[in-house]
Length: 116
Length: 114
Image (cartoon, rainbow over all chains, first blue to last red):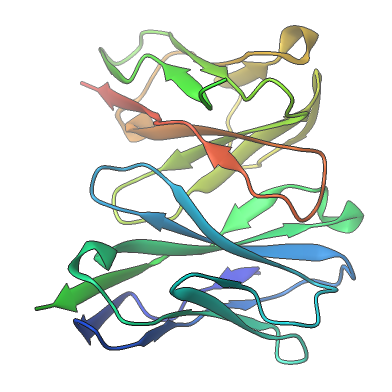
């Protein structure tokens, strides 16, 4: 079964507008971490933001925020004030605790296109 | 320490040859991961280590693939008798030994099997 699901293969957003990239996950672990990475065309994986399963507040890092809804098992990434340089692939990832063997697994990704 | 480094960055090999990739993680990181990524897809988990112990190996990994991390430092990933389907980007990442700690990635090794 898919543990990380990203249902949007591609998304378009107008420059300076906000965009939400969806991510749902599946785990029976109580302790886990959720992460978002950006992969531009150059290929490097750039860490953006993380959320711990016990964190009550949504994580924020500059223009990135993570909309964490634990009961719904969703961890959507919100990018505010989109910039042309935000055009890239975005991956949601999860690291489970002991039951998941502490490994990090990734979703299939969403390609974001920012329009001028 | 400047981050995770992988060598080589690119490798072209003929079908049937063996190849070996190296990954040097961030020195204080206990965990080391190998992933495979094909065009337009997310990184696919292959295997990972805690120190020198290989804790899990994906069922996707055939017997032609083997990984080691002697002494819990650098790691090698070997592919024997390469096939065209092995062509992909092979990514290495490392992280501290905590659930909520991001993994840092290397630049990857792009393998092309001709």
